Amino acid sequence: MSTQAARAPSPDQPILLREMVGPIAVLTLNRPAARNSLSTAMIATLHAALNDIGGDKAVRGVVLSANGPAFSAGHDMKELTARRADPDRGRAFFAEAMNACSAMMQAIVHLPKPVVAAVQGIATAAGCQLVASCDLAIASDAASFATPGVDIGLFCSTPMVALSRNVPRKQAMEMLLTGEPVPAARAREIGLVNRVVAAGAERDVAIALAQQVALKSAYTVKLGKEAFYRQAEMSLADAYRYASEVMTENMMARDAEEGIGAFIEKRTPTWRDE
Image 1: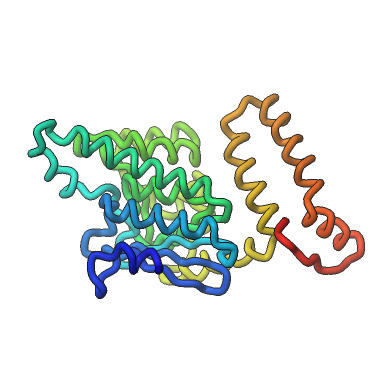
Image 2 (image 1 turned 180 degrees about the vertical axis):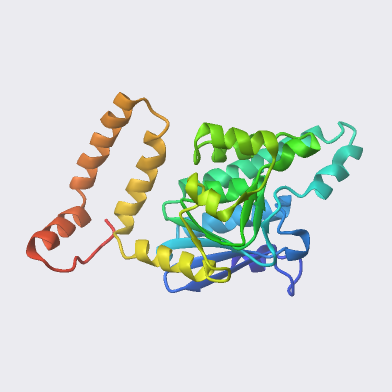
């Protein structure tokens, strides 16, 4: 059973759409009336979809897109505010929601396949965090990005984690402290997105980019993606030590032997993904 069928609130309105375009799984946030806010149901559904995809050998890449004018407005503030009536004023629910969202964001990073965001509109707070958590991002020239929690007395602390790992500190702090939206062109300049394309083209370009990566050895991509994020948290010496171990392990892989042989022999490699 597909993820959206299993978790949809109704047969007519699944909150997450999933389709295959060749070897690429396209996941589409589908709460346009709520600006694709990350309700607890949306977080759980997206996390479950990522878990399904992680073990599916037929899927070689993921594109994360959204329906409607907004990519995602972040957490569902109406859902969170409703829990103020709880005996603990919502503390337990807030902790559960934030931890679930953080786990879902980390699932994107830990997924052994590339994840490309296709951003067609505004991505704010946890929506901006979602873009920053993806490995690659394609933005429409109509897209914009913001961490405006400070405007409502709620500093974007969890979005800060992903944002500060994507853009330089001064730019991250400016976004976090002012809450001002950053247009797509500026987002590209500071490294939040890879490319800016004409409005309406972002989904196709994101799929094409994911398909380009899908032509590589899945084993090599898995190994490299994991190593990229792990070494980024290490000191320089530890990063080189770890990367040398990864390179040695990679050299022993069948696909590296095949790929190097194909390069020397001037032929197209045949991957076994091992």
